[in-house]
Length: 453
Image 1 (cartoon, one colour):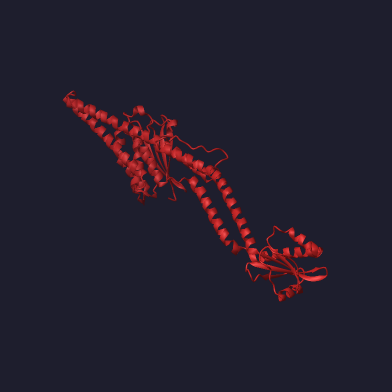
Image 2 (cartoon, helix red, strand yellow):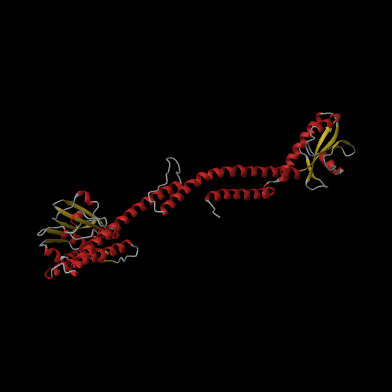
């Protein structure tokens, strides 16, 4: 059985009200001082009757009492020796002579309340009166339990009315509360089926509460999922392209060699090309694994203190075969400094930046590597005088598989993952990187390392 939030809200409200009604009905006798309440009321009734009786003659008393036929109480006017008037609504009023004498000793405004010996829940109120110059006692008897039960029944009916009206209102209010959640559920089912463009509408001026925040969070989440899905599709497309290109070359050249289409004296050249394509695939595989590792929460991160200037000098020496082959001059301007970082990860940053600079610098060009220290941060600059980067491409440089000029992918080796790896490593360290470039003038990559880190 499906239990909706709608039914839970209504059911909870009705349950709470029912429990409240039950407890109220049970606890009413304890919460109200019924004895004091009805003593006061009985006294007021008796005094009121006594005042009227004293204003009329004996012959008018029966007519007067007939006007109170709908009131359930007994009345007796007596002086102990004779009964001037008696009205029986229930049991006969019985009091002894000493009680009558006690009542006569009290003032008109100070009635005496007695417990009926025949019924403990009944009370007899005595008030001294003067009729035709003679002193009498007006006795009024009423069973307050019956009256109190009427009060309880009235309270009970009021609570039932609250239950009915409240249930109707909460029934209507629940629709307002549950409808946005139903929309979210419907939208979530669409997302589960792959429709990431779905959004939940939030009307201006409505849902200015936690539900509204949930709708905003849901819409933000779907927008991010849509971006991730687009990135995933682009990633798959790029990986497929990067793998397919060398595979096509390897397949074609291998087939040509196997079919003896290529002369023996040229086979070594084609085998070299096949080897280079295999190396290219190997680098792509390594970079993909490195990106996946950096994206995971379990990538090893072991920061230590070490000399940054020595690491930069070592990285330049590591890439010497590449820049020496192109007759590139590398200038070093390094200030000695220690940093606290993951040495292996940062070495990948410098190697990627240097390799990139060498790749896009013409033969006989220049690369400057500088380390500058200020009061708040350390700056590492890798500057070249190569082909430069178009302004519109600078903001996309650190995207995965992004290449400034895809038409030159074959002439300039690379798979577009190097700078994205650099960015990821620097983000892990909470460092930043800036790029300045002019087409035909060269590029400058600046890594900023806060001193306090």
